[in-house]
Length: 341
Image (cartoon, rainbow, N blue to C red; front, side):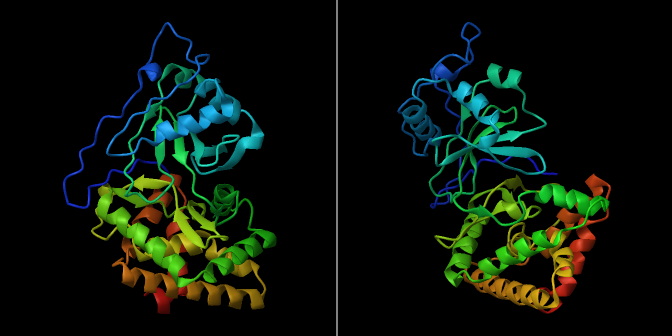
């Protein structure tokens, strides 16, 4: 269901149309059949654009840490070392590069293989500095390999969330109490964040709606990255808009925030696993989050997008042959009918 992360094309503040420029490929990055690309040290060009070429910054950083090793050698050694593995989504795995703080490697399992990685150039992607950091990619080989911006913080749900959802869908394994307790703790901590944290997220979503054709992936709550130290809430892993679904509802809005923060697909299951006291706490802190979302949304003009969410959850059921996601979402809406009617 999930697709590759997308670059963010902004129009400028003066309402000029955004013209998508061709990605700049340094001469030493272009394919050359006479060169063993795996063994050739990378280099970078000091190129200046009106838009920022983050790939140059990445290569400078990589060069300072890994000296004259080729970028492709570094990537392959990184993804083949389990210590660098961060986590997985439905379709992709993410790795940290040793010594590199601000960037990550994303590998789409279906599309990536070593042969295509070695044969195809890594193509930089221009970035506009208006963009908040949504974890968008700065370079790709168009065959399942991406270098993405790193968003500081921790994932908002279980590290094995895709596996848990699959087990719930197929009824092969229920949610464990410790997993339900962990989710409760994460939601509780988020409810304690100041209103300003929710306001900043709403502001970023407003920018997303105004300047891009990107849609928030509401399926996986781990696409919400929570930085407890700095009290920031961030989003990663954007989709192309689902324009084919026929919905006239806004794509990114109030329900996008609610669904990522409270995860309708597991909410009722989590609730049922907790003690009565914990159940009361889950409802209370969830309502606090919803109230803060509405306040933030009002400040930045975000609308309800519940109908679009229903379409997305329905699509999940359709493509997975399970009738799970949409009923779970509808049950979630019933629980908070007084807040989300």
